[in-house]
Image (cartoon, rainbow, N blue to C red; front, side, top):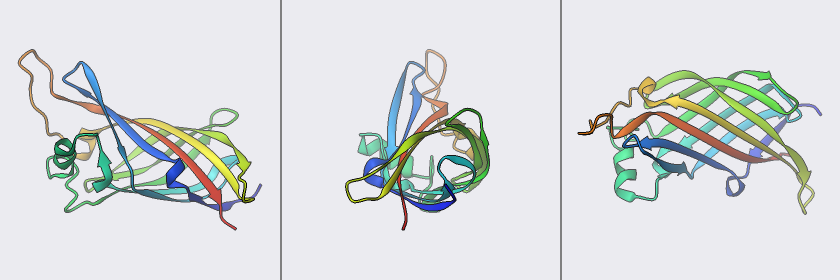
Length: 177
């Protein structure tokens, strides 16, 4: 297959994250509003061009008070930085349908090169004749790399919020005609 442009289906896609809380458990959340520009041969992603834009105000941890705090200057500072963006810079094939995707992730005004593990999940045709492709991605970032350092010390030692953020992405994309 040659390169084509793909449109992400947000109703069948997700961007989720988790972070340690109080050194003993994890808080999970998601971003519900995002889009992606993908130009690729889905069976060989090594030459793909991928750009993802996330509307940070769509953050959802199932706790509105916490979500509002995440939107504040203590964390994402959405008044000044309403979007989180990722733009691919390099893609290496590491297995049959597995890749390492490196790109510039920009959060709260800072860009850091990050690498995610990507799996091409497969392709099919929907009932309307559209070519549909599935991808999964996982990675870890440190929020401190983006200047997001808000925290509180615990009496028993440690901190309230972990530095490492685990990210999990599921994308279903349709080939544009």
